[in-house]
Length: 251
Image (cartoon, rainbow, N blue to C red):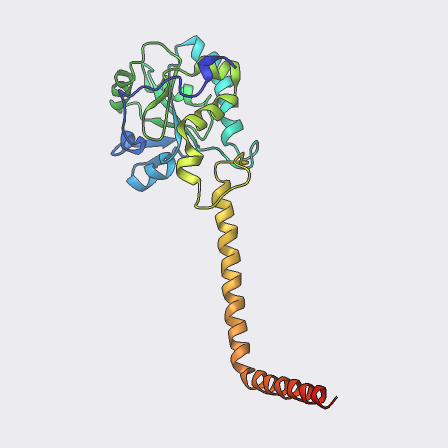
């Protein structure tokens, strides 16, 4: 793999903010049939917090954008769609439309994956983001870490050439597993099946602890009920030992 997709290649610091803050007080819309709106702080945090975010700047009038969409859809679904992957990756894709009309934006959205998010056409924040990330050409995909710093100013070429391998490099560079999901325990193998593997381990560990507590309570109740029998058994063992000792002395 060439250097263009290596981790740490874009250590830009001109943008440093919490990713969630970038879209707080904004309305993100899901590209599903109902076009559900996400506009509360809790909803925005739930969809963007601790995720690598891809900002897809494109236009329906751009032929290259239309040619890139099938590649992007395949890339995205292989990382997010449960039909292709058991544990979806910590990734979000937001379409930033540079279309000249709402009709053209809607037409372009029909070609995108249903889990893609987007800003409404009338939202002027689309242009602000274009200026903020200095986007001049389309298609452009700006890849951001959870802290808002730029992983790649334009990952279109990398996605076309390297496919899903790019995400592994982004994940390592963003340190999603180490910073956000590593628990206070030592793992023999850090090559986890997914970034959520430690969370699942914690779930099972918690369930084991609950079972142990239930067993301890049951054992405690049984112990209280059998204290007298245990005392009798102890006394009998003492007498038997004394008897054995006396027999030994006689011999």
